Image (cartoon, rainbow, N blue to C red; front, side, top):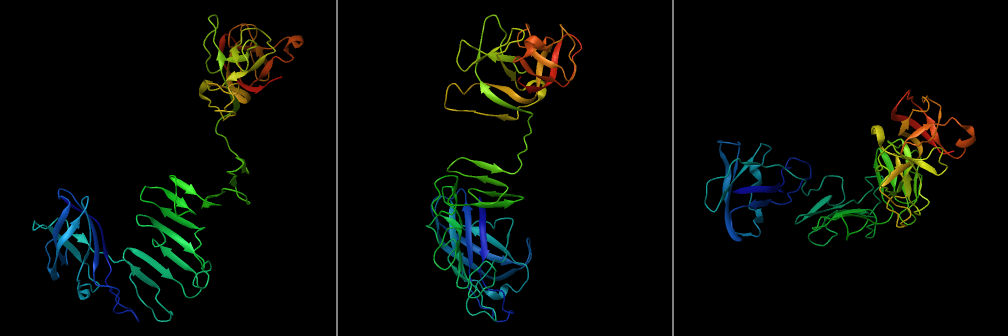
Length: 379
Protein backbone atom coordinates (compact mmCIF):
# COMPACT_ATOMS: atom_id res chain seq x y z
CA UNK A 1 0.00 0.00 0.00
CA UNK A 2 1.24 3.50 -0.82
CA UNK A 3 -0.04 6.70 0.77
CA UNK A 4 1.00 10.22 -0.19
CA UNK A 5 1.67 12.52 2.73
CA UNK A 6 2.61 15.69 0.89
CA UNK A 7 3.33 16.79 -2.66
CA UNK A 8 4.44 20.40 -3.14
CA UNK A 9 4.92 21.92 -6.60
CA UNK A 10 7.81 24.38 -6.64
CA UNK A 11 8.11 25.09 -10.38
CA UNK A 12 7.19 28.59 -11.51
CA UNK A 13 3.90 28.96 -13.34
CA UNK A 14 3.99 32.75 -13.34
CA UNK A 15 5.60 33.20 -16.74
CA UNK A 16 2.96 35.80 -17.54
CA UNK A 17 3.60 37.89 -14.41
CA UNK A 18 5.74 40.97 -14.85
CA UNK A 19 9.26 40.26 -13.65
CA UNK A 20 8.45 36.69 -12.52
CA UNK A 21 11.35 34.27 -12.24
CA UNK A 22 11.40 30.49 -12.17
CA UNK A 23 12.37 29.22 -8.71
CA UNK A 24 12.94 25.56 -9.61
CA UNK A 25 11.59 22.81 -11.85
CA UNK A 26 10.95 20.03 -9.38
CA UNK A 27 8.24 18.74 -7.09
CA UNK A 28 9.09 17.90 -3.50
CA UNK A 29 7.41 14.57 -2.78
CA UNK A 30 6.99 13.17 0.73
CA UNK A 31 5.12 9.89 1.03
CA UNK A 32 4.36 7.00 3.37
CA UNK A 33 5.01 3.46 2.06
CA UNK A 34 3.52 0.48 3.82
CA UNK A 35 4.53 -3.07 3.06
CA UNK A 36 7.88 -1.91 1.69
CA UNK A 37 11.01 -2.74 3.74
CA UNK A 38 13.60 -0.10 4.57
CA UNK A 39 16.22 0.35 1.90
CA UNK A 40 15.41 1.72 -1.53
CA UNK A 41 12.46 1.74 -3.92
CA UNK A 42 11.87 2.86 -7.52
CA UNK A 43 9.11 5.31 -8.44
CA UNK A 44 7.63 6.18 -11.82
CA UNK A 45 5.80 9.51 -11.90
CA UNK A 46 3.42 10.70 -14.63
CA UNK A 47 1.22 13.76 -14.97
CA UNK A 48 -2.31 13.67 -16.40
CA UNK A 49 -5.03 16.11 -17.39
CA UNK A 50 -7.76 14.11 -15.66
CA UNK A 51 -8.34 12.30 -12.36
CA UNK A 52 -9.21 9.12 -14.27
CA UNK A 53 -8.49 8.23 -17.89
CA UNK A 54 -7.47 11.33 -19.81
CA UNK A 55 -4.09 11.88 -21.43
CA UNK A 56 -0.57 11.92 -20.06
CA UNK A 57 1.05 15.36 -20.09
CA UNK A 58 4.84 15.47 -20.47
CA UNK A 59 7.23 12.58 -20.04
CA UNK A 60 7.40 9.86 -17.41
CA UNK A 61 9.90 10.65 -14.67
CA UNK A 62 11.71 7.62 -13.24
CA UNK A 63 13.26 7.84 -9.79
CA UNK A 64 15.63 5.00 -8.95
CA UNK A 65 17.08 3.94 -5.61
CA UNK A 66 14.83 6.26 -3.57
CA UNK A 67 15.77 5.85 0.14
CA UNK A 68 13.05 4.37 2.36
CA UNK A 69 13.38 4.81 6.12
CA UNK A 70 10.55 3.72 8.40
CA UNK A 71 8.29 3.66 5.35
CA UNK A 72 8.94 7.36 4.66
CA UNK A 73 10.31 8.64 1.35
CA UNK A 74 11.26 12.24 0.69
CA UNK A 75 12.57 12.96 -2.78
CA UNK A 76 12.49 15.71 -5.42
CA UNK A 77 10.64 14.71 -8.61
CA UNK A 78 12.86 16.15 -11.33
CA UNK A 79 13.20 17.31 -13.99
CA UNK A 80 9.67 18.63 -14.46
CA UNK A 81 8.86 20.52 -17.64
CA UNK A 82 7.31 23.76 -16.37
CA UNK A 83 5.45 24.20 -19.66
CA UNK A 84 2.99 21.41 -18.78
CA UNK A 85 1.72 23.58 -15.93
CA UNK A 86 0.02 26.17 -18.09
CA UNK A 87 -2.84 26.89 -15.72
CA UNK A 88 -4.79 23.71 -16.47
CA UNK A 89 -5.53 21.19 -13.73
CA UNK A 90 -2.92 18.43 -13.44
CA UNK A 91 -2.91 15.10 -11.59
CA UNK A 92 0.06 12.99 -10.52
CA UNK A 93 0.08 9.22 -11.06
CA UNK A 94 2.66 7.05 -9.27
CA UNK A 95 3.90 3.48 -9.71
CA UNK A 96 6.00 1.81 -7.00
CA UNK A 97 8.60 -0.85 -7.89
CA UNK A 98 7.02 -1.46 -11.31
CA UNK A 99 3.55 -2.17 -9.91
CA UNK A 100 0.22 -0.88 -11.13
CA UNK A 101 -0.48 2.82 -10.96
CA UNK A 102 -1.94 3.80 -7.61
CA UNK A 103 -5.50 5.04 -7.43
CA UNK A 104 -6.70 7.68 -7.07
CA UNK A 105 -4.29 10.05 -8.73
CA UNK A 106 -3.10 13.05 -6.70
CA UNK A 107 -4.15 16.60 -7.52
CA UNK A 108 -1.09 18.83 -8.00
CA UNK A 109 -1.56 22.16 -6.27
CA UNK A 110 0.67 25.20 -6.30
CA UNK A 111 2.50 26.63 -3.29
CA UNK A 112 4.32 29.96 -2.88
CA UNK A 113 7.43 30.15 -5.02
CA UNK A 114 10.42 32.48 -5.20
CA UNK A 115 9.84 35.46 -7.43
CA UNK A 116 10.84 39.01 -7.98
CA UNK A 117 8.10 41.51 -8.70
CA UNK A 118 8.57 44.87 -10.32
CA UNK A 119 9.03 47.62 -7.75
CA UNK A 120 10.72 45.57 -5.00
CA UNK A 121 14.43 46.03 -4.41
CA UNK A 122 15.29 42.37 -3.85
CA UNK A 123 13.85 38.89 -3.50
CA UNK A 124 10.62 38.77 -1.55
CA UNK A 125 10.85 35.06 -0.87
CA UNK A 126 13.65 32.53 -1.17
CA UNK A 127 13.63 28.76 -0.70
CA UNK A 128 16.17 26.60 1.06
CA UNK A 129 15.12 22.96 1.15
CA UNK A 130 11.92 22.77 3.18
CA UNK A 131 12.58 26.05 4.98
CA UNK A 132 11.21 29.41 3.87
CA UNK A 133 12.67 32.78 4.78
CA UNK A 134 11.19 36.19 4.05
CA UNK A 135 13.13 39.42 3.91
CA UNK A 136 11.33 42.76 3.92
CA UNK A 137 13.45 45.55 2.54
CA UNK A 138 10.85 48.21 3.15
CA UNK A 139 8.15 48.91 5.72
CA UNK A 140 5.34 46.89 4.15
CA UNK A 141 3.64 46.13 7.48
CA UNK A 142 3.08 48.51 10.44
CA UNK A 143 4.60 45.93 12.79
CA UNK A 144 7.63 45.11 10.62
CA UNK A 145 10.60 47.39 11.09
CA UNK A 146 12.74 48.41 8.14
CA UNK A 147 15.47 45.85 7.91
CA UNK A 148 13.53 43.42 10.10
CA UNK A 149 13.11 39.77 9.22
CA UNK A 150 10.62 36.95 9.45
CA UNK A 151 11.82 33.36 9.33
CA UNK A 152 9.90 30.09 9.16
CA UNK A 153 11.66 26.91 10.18
CA UNK A 154 15.21 28.16 9.76
CA UNK A 155 15.98 29.32 13.30
CA UNK A 156 15.76 25.95 15.02
CA UNK A 157 17.61 22.66 15.10
CA UNK A 158 16.59 19.88 12.66
CA UNK A 159 13.37 18.20 13.71
CA UNK A 160 11.86 21.44 14.98
CA UNK A 161 9.27 23.59 13.24
CA UNK A 162 8.80 27.16 14.23
CA UNK A 163 7.77 30.67 13.34
CA UNK A 164 10.20 33.19 14.77
CA UNK A 165 10.02 36.95 14.61
CA UNK A 166 13.21 38.93 14.20
CA UNK A 167 13.59 42.64 14.78
CA UNK A 168 17.02 43.51 13.50
CA UNK A 169 19.03 41.06 15.62
CA UNK A 170 17.85 37.55 16.42
CA UNK A 171 15.21 38.37 19.01
CA UNK A 172 13.12 35.28 19.77
CA UNK A 173 11.01 36.91 22.47
CA UNK A 174 7.95 36.49 20.23
CA UNK A 175 8.18 32.98 18.81
CA UNK A 176 6.27 29.78 18.39
CA UNK A 177 8.05 26.47 18.06
CA UNK A 178 7.02 22.81 18.04
CA UNK A 179 9.67 20.18 18.64
CA UNK A 180 9.84 16.67 17.27
CA UNK A 181 8.84 15.45 20.75
CA UNK A 182 5.54 17.33 20.48
CA UNK A 183 6.36 20.16 22.90
CA UNK A 184 5.16 23.66 22.00
CA UNK A 185 7.13 26.70 23.08
CA UNK A 186 6.17 30.36 23.11
CA UNK A 187 9.13 32.66 23.52
CA UNK A 188 11.58 29.76 23.80
CA UNK A 189 13.27 27.66 21.13
CA UNK A 190 13.68 24.71 23.51
CA UNK A 191 10.31 23.96 25.16
CA UNK A 192 10.60 21.49 28.04
CA UNK A 193 6.87 20.83 28.51
CA UNK A 194 3.76 20.24 26.42
CA UNK A 195 3.23 24.02 26.51
CA UNK A 196 6.22 26.07 27.66
CA UNK A 197 5.77 29.84 27.83
CA UNK A 198 8.71 32.15 28.48
CA UNK A 199 8.21 35.75 29.50
CA UNK A 200 4.91 37.61 29.20
CA UNK A 201 2.51 35.85 26.85
CA UNK A 202 -0.71 37.44 25.64
CA UNK A 203 -3.49 35.32 24.14
CA UNK A 204 -6.40 37.07 22.48
CA UNK A 205 -9.57 35.32 21.42
CA UNK A 206 -12.62 37.02 22.85
CA UNK A 207 -10.96 37.38 26.26
CA UNK A 208 -7.63 39.06 26.86
CA UNK A 209 -5.27 36.94 28.93
CA UNK A 210 -1.87 38.05 30.17
CA UNK A 211 0.42 36.00 32.38
CA UNK A 212 1.88 38.88 34.41
CA UNK A 213 0.84 42.51 34.78
CA UNK A 214 -1.04 44.90 32.51
CA UNK A 215 -4.64 46.00 32.21
CA UNK A 216 -6.26 42.81 30.99
CA UNK A 217 -9.48 40.99 31.80
CA UNK A 218 -7.53 38.15 33.41
CA UNK A 219 -4.06 38.37 34.92
CA UNK A 220 -2.11 35.48 36.42
CA UNK A 221 1.14 36.16 38.25
CA UNK A 222 3.08 32.91 38.13
CA UNK A 223 5.56 34.13 40.76
CA UNK A 224 3.03 35.02 43.48
CA UNK A 225 0.08 32.88 42.38
CA UNK A 226 -2.19 35.94 42.47
CA UNK A 227 -4.98 36.02 39.86
CA UNK A 228 -6.86 39.22 39.07
CA UNK A 229 -10.16 39.33 37.19
CA UNK A 230 -12.76 42.05 36.70
CA UNK A 231 -15.82 39.83 37.12
CA UNK A 232 -15.76 36.17 38.17
CA UNK A 233 -18.89 34.16 37.42
CA UNK A 234 -19.30 30.90 39.35
CA UNK A 235 -21.82 28.35 38.09
CA UNK A 236 -22.27 26.78 41.53
CA UNK A 237 -24.29 28.33 44.35
CA UNK A 238 -22.20 28.28 47.53
CA UNK A 239 -18.76 28.83 49.02
CA UNK A 240 -17.47 25.73 50.76
CA UNK A 241 -14.42 24.31 52.49
CA UNK A 242 -13.33 20.66 52.53
CA UNK A 243 -13.55 18.79 55.84
CA UNK A 244 -13.04 15.32 57.20
CA UNK A 245 -16.03 14.08 59.19
CA UNK A 246 -15.82 11.86 62.23
CA UNK A 247 -17.89 8.72 61.84
CA UNK A 248 -19.86 7.21 64.68
CA UNK A 249 -21.71 3.96 65.24
CA UNK A 250 -24.71 5.89 66.56
CA UNK A 251 -24.80 8.51 63.77
CA UNK A 252 -25.58 8.09 60.05
CA UNK A 253 -22.82 8.37 57.46
CA UNK A 254 -22.40 11.94 56.20
CA UNK A 255 -24.39 12.75 53.06
CA UNK A 256 -24.99 15.91 50.97
CA UNK A 257 -27.54 18.14 52.68
CA UNK A 258 -26.68 17.08 56.24
CA UNK A 259 -25.99 19.71 58.88
CA UNK A 260 -22.60 19.31 60.59
CA UNK A 261 -20.91 20.71 63.69
CA UNK A 262 -17.38 21.12 64.98
CA UNK A 263 -16.09 17.92 66.60
CA UNK A 264 -14.41 18.96 69.89
CA UNK A 265 -12.78 15.54 70.23
CA UNK A 266 -10.96 15.65 66.83
CA UNK A 267 -9.05 18.78 65.85
CA UNK A 268 -10.02 20.16 62.45
CA UNK A 269 -12.85 17.67 61.94
CA UNK A 270 -16.62 17.95 61.88
CA UNK A 271 -19.37 15.55 62.94
CA UNK A 272 -22.99 15.06 61.90
CA UNK A 273 -25.04 17.20 64.28
CA UNK A 274 -27.61 15.60 66.58
CA UNK A 275 -28.25 18.21 69.30
CA UNK A 276 -30.85 21.02 69.13
CA UNK A 277 -29.49 24.55 69.09
CA UNK A 278 -25.88 23.36 68.78
CA UNK A 279 -23.64 26.44 68.97
CA UNK A 280 -20.83 24.46 67.30
CA UNK A 281 -22.81 24.27 64.04
CA UNK A 282 -20.46 24.73 61.05
CA UNK A 283 -22.67 24.48 57.96
CA UNK A 284 -24.20 21.90 55.62
CA UNK A 285 -22.59 19.41 53.24
CA UNK A 286 -22.90 20.75 49.67
CA UNK A 287 -24.32 18.88 46.69
CA UNK A 288 -27.87 17.97 47.74
CA UNK A 289 -30.83 18.54 45.44
CA UNK A 290 -28.61 18.61 42.35
CA UNK A 291 -27.17 22.01 43.35
CA UNK A 292 -23.41 21.85 42.83
CA UNK A 293 -20.82 23.57 44.97
CA UNK A 294 -19.57 26.93 43.67
CA UNK A 295 -16.15 27.48 45.23
CA UNK A 296 -14.13 25.07 47.37
CA UNK A 297 -11.44 26.89 49.35
CA UNK A 298 -8.35 25.19 50.69
CA UNK A 299 -8.68 22.14 48.43
CA UNK A 300 -5.52 19.98 48.45
CA UNK A 301 -3.90 22.18 51.09
CA UNK A 302 -0.78 20.57 52.54
CA UNK A 303 -1.92 21.21 56.13
CA UNK A 304 -3.72 18.04 57.33
CA UNK A 305 -6.12 20.16 59.37
CA UNK A 306 -7.25 21.98 56.22
CA UNK A 307 -8.30 19.04 54.10
CA UNK A 308 -11.13 16.58 53.69
CA UNK A 309 -13.50 14.79 51.35
CA UNK A 310 -16.72 16.66 52.18
CA UNK A 311 -17.33 20.23 50.91
CA UNK A 312 -19.21 22.06 53.67
CA UNK A 313 -21.09 25.23 52.67
CA UNK A 314 -20.14 28.25 54.77
CA UNK A 315 -22.06 30.78 52.69
CA UNK A 316 -24.46 30.89 49.75
CA UNK A 317 -27.43 28.73 48.81
CA UNK A 318 -27.51 25.01 49.53
CA UNK A 319 -30.23 22.39 49.98
CA UNK A 320 -30.40 21.23 53.61
CA UNK A 321 -32.17 18.25 55.19
CA UNK A 322 -34.81 19.61 57.55
CA UNK A 323 -37.33 18.23 60.07
CA UNK A 324 -40.64 20.08 60.37
CA UNK A 325 -41.95 17.91 63.22
CA UNK A 326 -41.69 20.76 65.77
CA UNK A 327 -42.97 23.43 63.41
CA UNK A 328 -43.61 24.10 59.71
CA UNK A 329 -40.74 25.84 57.93
CA UNK A 330 -41.52 28.88 55.78
CA UNK A 331 -39.30 31.20 53.72
CA UNK A 332 -37.45 33.61 56.01
CA UNK A 333 -37.46 31.35 59.08
CA UNK A 334 -34.23 30.96 61.00
CA UNK A 335 -32.94 27.38 61.00
CA UNK A 336 -30.89 25.62 63.65
CA UNK A 337 -29.75 22.09 64.46
CA UNK A 338 -32.24 19.49 65.66
CA UNK A 339 -32.25 16.19 67.53
CA UNK A 340 -32.73 14.40 64.21
CA UNK A 341 -29.14 13.58 63.10
CA UNK A 342 -28.00 15.76 60.21
CA UNK A 343 -31.27 17.72 60.05
CA UNK A 344 -32.09 21.36 60.69
CA UNK A 345 -35.33 22.67 62.20
CA UNK A 346 -37.10 25.98 62.66
CA UNK A 347 -35.49 28.07 65.42
CA UNK A 348 -38.33 29.12 67.72
CA UNK A 349 -36.48 29.96 70.95
CA UNK A 350 -34.66 33.32 70.78
CA UNK A 351 -32.92 32.56 74.03
CA UNK A 352 -31.16 29.58 72.46
CA UNK A 353 -30.68 30.46 68.80
CA UNK A 354 -27.84 32.97 69.30
CA UNK A 355 -24.76 31.32 67.72
CA UNK A 356 -26.75 28.25 66.68
CA UNK A 357 -28.43 29.50 63.48
CA UNK A 358 -27.21 27.98 60.21
CA UNK A 359 -29.15 30.38 57.98
CA UNK A 360 -32.60 31.29 56.63
CA UNK A 361 -35.07 29.12 54.74
CA UNK A 362 -35.84 30.12 51.13
CA UNK A 363 -38.44 27.39 50.50
CA UNK A 364 -41.05 25.81 52.77
CA UNK A 365 -41.53 22.43 54.41
CA UNK A 366 -44.99 22.14 55.96
CA UNK A 367 -44.51 18.79 57.66
CA UNK A 368 -42.27 15.76 57.91
CA UNK A 369 -38.71 15.66 56.65
CA UNK A 370 -37.25 16.88 53.37
CA UNK A 371 -34.91 19.29 51.59
CA UNK A 372 -35.19 23.02 52.06
CA UNK A 373 -33.23 25.59 50.09
CA UNK A 374 -31.28 27.56 52.69
CA UNK A 375 -29.34 30.81 52.46
CA UNK A 376 -26.44 29.82 54.67
CA UNK A 377 -25.39 32.58 57.04
CA UNK A 378 -23.96 31.34 60.33
CA UNK A 379 -25.22 33.46 63.25
